[in-house]
Image 1 (tube, rainbow, N blue to C red):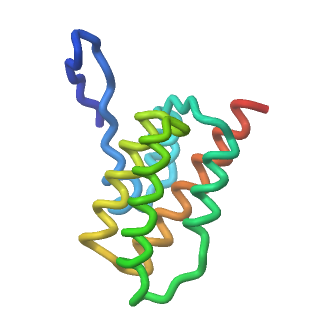
Image 2: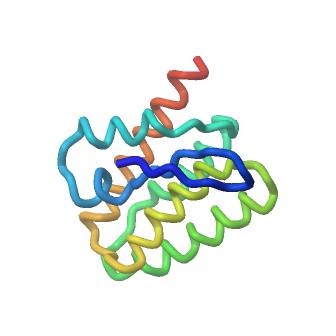
Image 3: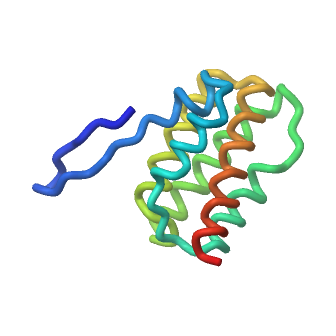
Length: 125
């Protein structure tokens, strides 16, 4: 599940989120992926993004909403209000959703992000 990449001489974990989020119905695998995130941004930034994700969508609106979420996450990264690891995780998930825009996949993404918010809140609290 983990690959080690060399970047600027520093070793860093690259986490594959696609498998546990979209292709596995095993909550244990999803929890492992969530626990590997080392988030440094504030709870409020997580909540803002989560609030956008939890909007109720029709199946034909998913691609358009994913584009909006991609722009929001890119904007937040450029403003440096979210950390790189969260950006990379969400970006991979959104890329997958863009290619596979089903209501079921969007719900899995929502549940994954909900777990991230809950776990991150627990860590800070």
